[in-house]
Each structure stands twice: as structure tokens, then as C-alpha cells.
Length: 107
Image (cartoon, rainbow, N blue to C red; front, top):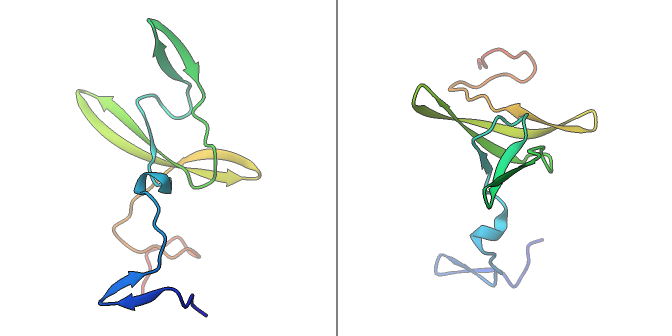
């Protein structure tokens, strides 16, 4: 059953508590270093290196790769494989893929 304090008044939901968009945690990390390498961070002219390992399953990171003067973005997602978090590259499709066969879905 829905919460009786939440109502639809003049096409607007009332009685809801909102959260700042920045607190939603929907922002991916970005990097100019390959995701399987450590990222150099400058600090007063000295560089130190930090891990880029995923922190939780479903986390996104965007790797900006500059090749031949062109910057391309590659998306990676954190995936739990046998208890180990790993980055896996996101593949974009313009068709629907059948998860059982790996082939294009046909009705």
C-alpha cells in the first residue's frame, strides 16, 4: 500500500522529501589514464599515484583517450566476478540482444 501522506495535488506530488541531485551518486569518475593503471596526481610539483580500482559494483568510470589529437570517451562499469571487482568496458548496441543466445532479438 502506498504512503497516505503522499498525494497528487494539481498534478504535483506532495509530501515527498527531496534529495540534492549531487547527493544521488550518479556521477561517474573520469580519468585520462587507462583504468587498469594507476592514475598520477600532481601535488606541488610532485606526482603520486592512486589506484583506480572500482569501489562498488555498478560504479562507472569514463576514460578519455587521446589518440591522434582526437579525444574519445570509453565507458567502464565495475563488475563483481567471483568476488573480485573488475572494470569491464561498456558496449553500446543499437539493437536488442537476446541475453540467452547473444544474438539479435527477434519477436
